Amino acid sequence: MSIDTTADVAADPKDESEIRSGVLLSGNEAVARGAVEAGVLVAAGYPGTPSTEILESIADRDDIDVRWSPNEKVALDVALGASLGGVRALVTMKHVGLNVASDTFMTTAYTGVGAGLVIVTADDPGMHSSQNEQDSRAFARMAGVPLLEPADSSEARDFTALAFAISEEFDTPVLIRTTTRVSHNRGLVDLGPRTEHPVTGFTSNPTKYVMIPGFARQRRPEMLKRLELLSDYVEASPLTVESGGNTGIGVVTSGIAHHYVREVLPDTRILKLGMSYPIPTERIRSFAESVDRLFVVEELDPHLEHDLMAAGITVEGKAFFPQVGELSPDAVRRGFVAAGILPPVPTVEPAPPTVTRPPLMCPGCPHTPPFLALRRLGAVVTGDIGCYTLAALEPLSSMDTCVAMGSSIGMAVGMAASGGAGGPVVATIGDSTFLHGGIQGLIDAVYSQADITVLILDNGTVAMTGGQEHPGTGITLQGAETTPVDLVALCAALGVRDVKVIDPYDLAATFSALEGATTSPGPSVVITNRPCVEAPTKVRDRPYEVLAEACTACQACMTAGCPSIVWSDETFEGRRKVVIDPVTCTGCTLCAQICPPLAIIPIPDPVPEVPEHV
Ligand SMILES: Cc1ncc(C[n+]2csc(CCOP(=O)(O)OP(=O)(O)O)c2C)c(N)n1
Image 1 (cartoon, rainbow, N blue to C red):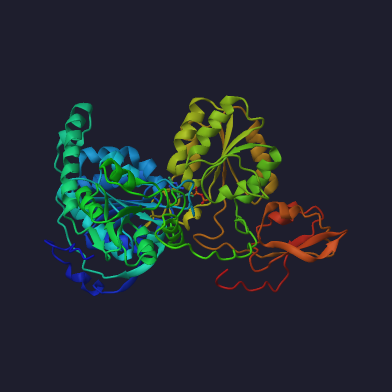
Image 2 (cartoon, rainbow, N blue to C red):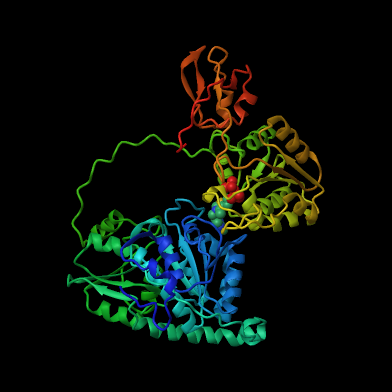
């Protein structure tokens, strides 16, 4: 589709050099590009796969304020404030981030916007990197906010730019939902000029922006009226595209599923919805009347299917296409086979199973030693989301719960209150996660004087999503130095009397700090102080090696789960000895500290060279 997103606005001549056609961009880069072309001036977000690269791809622009916020709600608050101040604002997050931002989100539907406000939520069907696979489209319906679903990079650029125009025309935030394949796939995109929008400034209007009950009651009918206008708009919008011949069946689809349907049924009539809330009901009704059987193919929930059924349109969908996990051309083909549209596909002998390789923490990861200590202490560990969640897996096997970002501390408070934990209760949480949603849990621990220990694994980065900055690092997304949050002072200010900082590479000290903290009454906090070994700079010290003659094959080092320690061909009393890969070993010393016969020592000179990519 081709949407003119530059109508009525002047191109910025300094960006003429950026105007090119057929540039290969990921969906995330294309969303960012659409925002750039739409003249966005403030872009805020919180990292989360698969959305992270949207902001990263424009962080080097000096004409946009691009920033990480401590969490998604703050990011939306920042973007809403900017929008009310009269500049176009973008906010980005992964699907679960919209849960965090939802309190603001639901009420922005009442306030409306100043300049255009666009919210991008990237869903993760199949849970490649998420704790659930909720379908964000439900939020659009719940809030009464229009929803656009690009199917590829080209549409990601077009729809984002258009979303700003829709936002301003209808005085509403606009939600854009991508999914992993749209966010991460690359496709050709035509780049247009950046457009300038004069800062309109803030106009005080309490009945619109102060949502006390009396004013909010006036705004809700406004929101419903706007939805009616949007329904009219979408009926005639080029966002809905019809294609295909006359095969008797018709398919309504949206997002990446559209490409799968076209691949599987190239000649079939397809009605592709670019706006999937509200939907063009009458257009779909006449499409339905022109076909013998109507299907809906959509990823995750029966969002469109239910809307069509509610409109009295006979449709088939989730009876044939899975509601769980990602769709794929194969899954869509199987659905049409089951529906009797395609002949059965000959069964292919399944490939022999590959060796499973569970994810492990990196060699030298400073998160590992504290979990060895917690395992030894028999602690009940309420965990959180980050690289350290891998401690739940073998061989560390030392995390008992992990639900949502920041939940660890509140859950520890509740676990302690239950009296049924059966061991010391320790909440483990990363630095970014603590600043995202952990602080309030700690306030509750202090308020209720809970007998818990909070272990803050401060590696100075958001490692899980690729090493982003956060308010504790003292550096902004655009590289400026700023005041870092002082975790020790923060915890003390909240009222925690027992706050200790430990070097996690010192296993004995880590053990005794955690033992002391878990036996002292009331809430205590232990904070680690070693940086991530991969970001922002790689930490590589002199690697270690195993003295084969001294190794007794006790395999104690293997319980740390370090990927640099591998099996040797040699044995001792029938058990396999180990060796250390000198290229990936970071020299953290952990294995040397836990080796009973002291068979692990620093490698003597010359130290092997580490290739660039390791
Ligand atoms: C609400 C929400 N937002 C974002 C994410 C993506 N995410 C998972 S863990 C994490 C932060 C990890 O950083 P940190 O707590 O510092 O731990 P590290 O990975 O550095 O060990 C993020 C942003 C998520 N899962 N949920």
